[in-house]
Image (cartoon, rainbow, N blue to C red; front, side, top):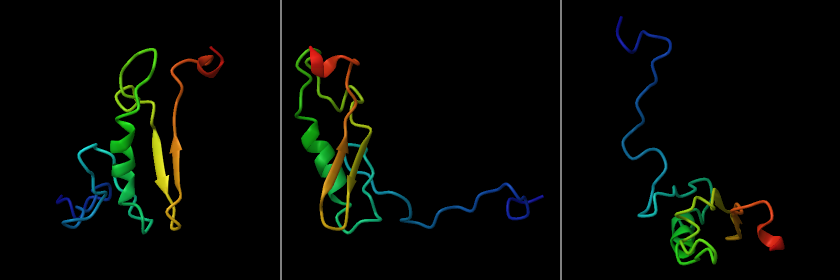
Length: 88
């Protein structure tokens, strides 16, 4: 049975389809006119250093999400290293 006949086979993505990733590895949000800013924002966040661990917050996987809407407003989700991080 060929892949085209097999019901669970996925069709290959057209060339150039799918998310575009920058050097940061973060995919640009193609649903927004300003989605190209996502990898740029992530790149800027590589300069933000955790004061206790002294490593970039991006290397510590503290930035799970970056979204830019059609008005170029960015929403950055940041995880804290500990539950008491803002209280210490």
